[in-house]
Length: 165
Image (cartoon, rainbow, N blue to C red; front, side):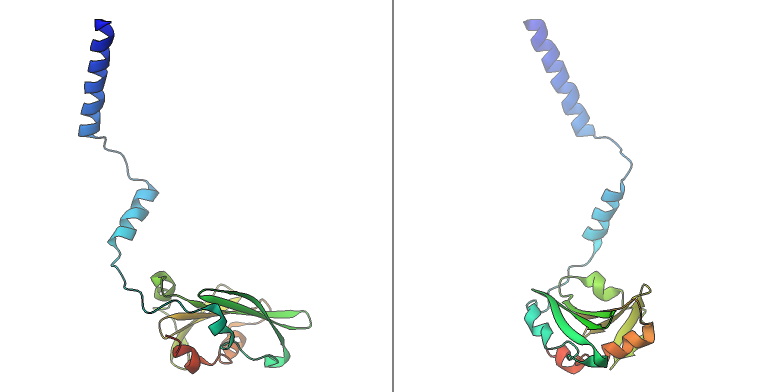
């Protein structure tokens, strides 16, 4: 029994020594992401998150470009509507980016604007607008080019949306 205790004690000392000394492990991608998150400056939230129903009034009106509007989704900080005309569908969404500084940061190099707010193409089917550095409006339609999607963004009452803060 003494031999068993001696082996257990030796093993405990060995494990404790390893834990104290530590291992030099190569950083993983998860470690790098954790470091990036920790390095980001804390950003104070700006006001309460806007309820999705408030965004419904900011959508282009029913009949825009001859399309029929149907509200498809509404939740805290987000609303979406689809506009259909024949087989063509245009999706318009508005989201509150209050807690998402990365969503706002992607507009830093935007080259277009709608009423002074930055706009940009996103992929081949979407165009985005950032209103008051807070609300992101997305127009998605595979049958429309960027210029046509910008025209849809101009149907959004940007001035009213900017006042939702």
